[in-house]
Structure formats: C-alpha cells, structure tokens
Amino acid sequence: MKIVFSLGSNLGDREDNIESAITELNNLVEITHVSTFLETDPVGGPKQPQYINAVAIAEGDLDPEQLMKEVLAIEMKLGRVRDVKWGPRTIDIDIIVIDDLTINSPGLTLPHPWAHTRYFVLEPWLEIDPQAEIPGKGLVADLVASLEDN
Image (cartoon, rainbow, N blue to C red; front, side):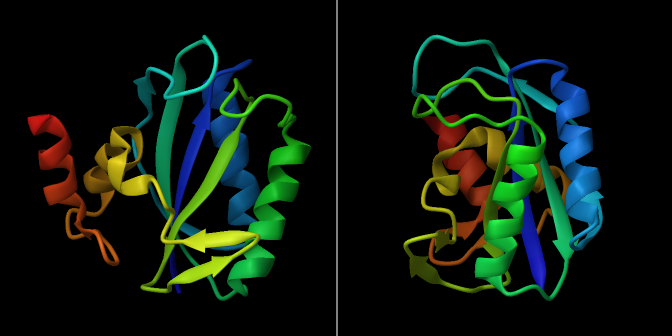
C-alpha cells in the first residue's frame, strides 16, 4: 500500500527531528520518497516558533490502525508532548492517505481531514508526486493552485 506521511517540527533541532522520524518510519515501512524541507508559519494554536515540514511517501502492508499506533509511539519516542492543542512540538507525524482508503474511526481518519487545506502538506507532496490525489478532494496540484489563488 502507498502511504503518505506529513512531518513537522518546531522545537529543538527541527531538521534532525524530522530526519529521526523518517528513520524510525523506515523501520516500519519502506520510505521511497522524501520532499525537501519547507519552513512554514504555525497554523492555529498559541504563538510559537516556525515549523520545518516535509512529506514522505512509503510502501507498506501494516494494518492502518496498527500503523497509527506505531506512529504515535515514534512521536513519543522522539519527545512529543501533547499538552496544548496545536501547540509547539518536537515532532508531528500525520498519516495523510493510505492508497484510496477511507477510514473514520476513533483513532484514525483517512484521508487526513485537513490535509487538503494545508499548504505545508500539499506543496512538499506535490514536489515528490506530481500526480498525487486526495480521495474525495482532488488532485494535489489543483488543491495547491486553489490555495495560491486565495
């Protein structure tokens, strides 16, 4: 299955945090593509430092719910603390899509419910997969263009 991850960090050594997360993810699935890193302003939450964001594409066959549990464990291992909603973090790893699966469970929603509105997800993803599509939302290239028009 093709899996798309979004990664972000705005605490500590941001680049190293993302590289460490990619290494950890590669122990679960095969990372095939990684975007360049993009510095972005935080979206929502309290005043906080800028983020470094990236997107990684992988191939794997883990059950989606199990993959989500493993992703949360990686975040904890890398120092993620969840005390302020949309607050600063050492690492944030989101599963954006897994193939064209649609899941709406307490622990996992696919496609990611806000990915189609987030430039920091769409732009790096488009860089490494020009034909990318979010099921039910459209081509990533079209979504990027619509955000740039606003």
